Figure (cartoon, rainbow, N blue to C red):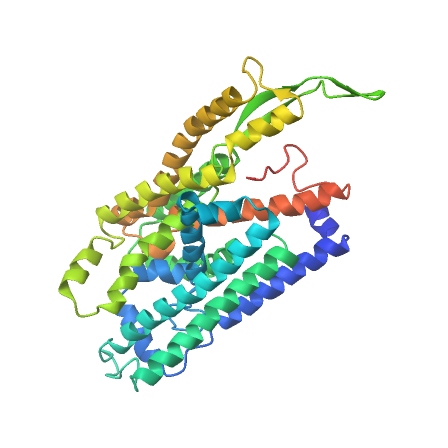
Length: 442
């Protein structure tokens, strides 16, 4: 491991990419502490101290702690993810977007541009709702001061411009990491925001233990549960179903091509962490709508079912994870394209006819493999609900025993390590693992 880390800094390109990524992440963390003008920070802190729990904690987790401080990065990267979901859903049903997806690089550039426009529109709407929400918070129970001392159209417009600009800046930072750094930029921004909450969660748990509110045996059980869950998530993420493929011999001039045996690796979790992120962004929608109607009892009743302490929330959340796992897998891997490429290069699956039969065979296996993967993914995602109910652990810490936080941390860490591993192996350096290379999800 030490030699592998030393090897990273012997490769100029890899070293520069890692340092660039770290620099961008530092900029992101600094921006997460710059408050929006016109906010009384102490009054806002007092409000969130009394309103702990619910979707506020989840939203704040994805925003890296910036939401509860009402900083310029309070919206996080979720508007960009929401725009991406909308474009991908449209690509499945609207011919125009289907055509763009098939146009190669030019089509991807157009979709990226439309996603950016959608991000600006969604961030402006969410910033407006958040500004209305902040204005309607009552006086602090401690100091008696308002969160927004001077409410009005001026504050709303300033908040919309500031937060929307912050969201666009996060999107740009993520794109820069993807292009010039290491790993997926958007995923790494979410990853670093979640990791930033871990020290506070540990400190809170230590205080609970010192105060006698938590038995030492409970802490041992929770630690064992965390290790076991992390091991299970790694196993799930790395699980692969191999389909054997045989290539026929071809004579081209004086050379003979083909004749070897290989396999198609179908991941149990082909979609990675994207179903979790997609489902979570959809679950934020009710709370966003509530900010537009702060005094409506009907809206408050409906949104109450989407509170993270409600079993209804977790049932809907788990179901959406299963749906988005299949949805994103269908986008990431097209059995028809795989079958056509195999046929083009003389490949075939033993016992299966090339062409349509091969695509149907691959699709059938992919469907069967994805089902347990999606169910296990949903089980891990809803695990914090049962932990908080059984052990009374606060949500910030429970999310690291399972759920969205742990899945994203493990998935993004494995993806980033796989990219670093590829750079090392390409330049004939030993990777991080001497036996059994790190297998990427793609």
